[in-house]
Image 1 (tube, helix red, strand yellow):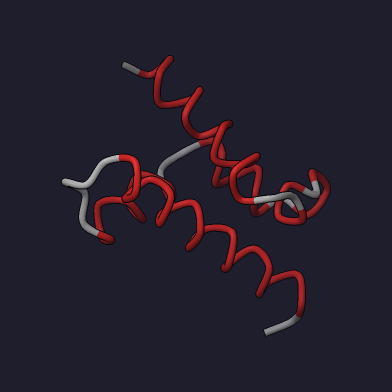
Image 2 (cartoon, helix red, strand yellow):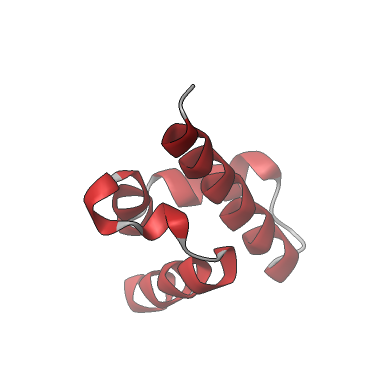
Length: 71
C-alpha cells in the first residue's frame, strides 16, 4: 500500500469513527457503509481533490452537510 492509499484508508476510518461518536447507536459496519455510499467518499478517493490530506474533522463536515441535505 502506498502512502496516499494509506492516507485515504485512514481518512475513511477516522470519518467512520467520528460518525459513530456523533451517533452512539451506529455500529462500525453501519458507519463504514454510510461513508462508502457517500459523495464525500468519492472525493476522498479522488487524488486530485487532496481531501485525503485534510483533517478528519474538516472532511467530516462535508459528510455531515451531505447527510443533512439527503434527509
